[in-house]
Image (cartoon, rainbow, N blue to C red):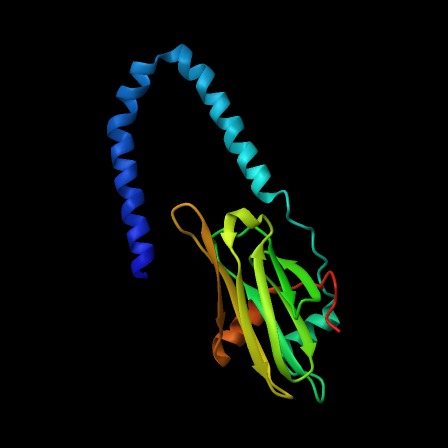
Length: 193
């Protein structure tokens, strides 16, 4: 377990402990009638926030089996390079990430999904932001790739106290293969040229 996960687990256990100690006296002080009014209001508010946070997600189109098989081989066409953007993990898993490649190609992925682009060799720029821009700060990534090269970028959201950050990491060969084989290939909304 990483240090950050251990920290959050400790905070959750402490919060649960204090909630168990403080909760019953607070509920008694508030009274049953007030709780009968407050509980549904808080539930409706919570559901409303979840609906708002996911309202910018798009329903993506999964690639056909032939394209998936080609993607899993991780071999670009002759004279081209291949870029993958994969997303795995639990944090904000349902929140869509808008992916833009070189300012023109665009698509959206959620956790367990990836995008793939066959591009000309050279320098390319990725820009990734959450579908609801106010939930996390976006990130950019410069990629230099030669002919026959394959680059796999792992996209994730790292949560902060009030706002998250999109984090992009270039994966090594073994992690890249694992991510490409573990995620579903989605089609770009606007395909790379």
